[in-house]
Length: 465
Image: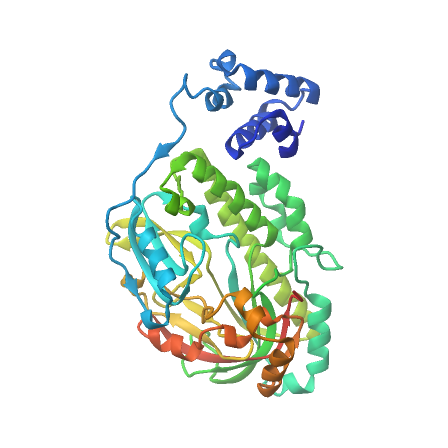
């Protein structure tokens, strides 16, 4: 028997913890009960939680509604008086608000270490471009809404003149084999092992999200997400182990779609209810990894990250088949995620990278600029001060709202025309001038990564805002 969150809200179950507990109990123990029986019991429990304190099935939910009888379900934390020190790269390019947000993160009692990347700008909670290592806990909002968002670059067995000779076919393929935005999906079914993963049966939320995952597999979100063809120039002895020279390449940027957003909202709300922080730090509420909720989030986050990768895999397979291109190599690197990593000899932590990517020694990655500027294939150097991280892009120089106010569609078209770039969809929010100069950002992190290739976009597909 299933019951919806809206139905629970009508019964008086008005917070996420209560609803989550109720749904979990019902899905595990009430398969043969009628909705009427469950509704009556839920109403009685809400009115008389003490009656159920010794009930093997319902005691946890009763405990939630009887705080005077049971131990409190939340803990209040104070911030450190002063922030722990952290390394900043390219500080002169970073706005003061982003630095202040990072300083606040460094005052959390679970914080161990942190760093700020040169593409950093203000976000919600942890700044975009922030890297935060904490002790045995995960902060859903420091991971972010678009869990596992990533760059994926495929290099093909075609030389750069292919882009001019087959520009019409490329445009038609991008229109027919990609889909952007929150609703709907591709007009043809997508197959991937992610759809059969057993984790979807592990929590009520993941069960509910499976249908959305099926619909959105192989698609991209809105905002700054894109799929684009361009030319990449690889250096000698590059990390892809391909001969130096120019190649056609496909670059995509998107994440875990509606699945990641739902997981982020659900567990961020639970974290704020069990981890009480001063008002200015509420976004940093965490879940202990030794708690049931923390383990549920960790499971869900990793599944969402795998789904984001599956979307890129389908996008690249679909387009390469449509155009008859053979893939020579692929590299993908994700941000908006948390990893368990060794940050010092024998010392492990949960490293959150919000708009920052792994740059461990020998790890390949891609750092984009904008739709009219270069992006770079890189190889990490494994710098401990940066928590083995690098930027995830050039970073925004102005907000989307400011870009909408300052630029026009005609100005965007003129700039792209001058750069020889064709745009399908897109909006002035993604005007290249709204981004920092990637060729100023890259020197600020030359201690973190080596450059192994330079990519220039030529045909870009984005959502129409």
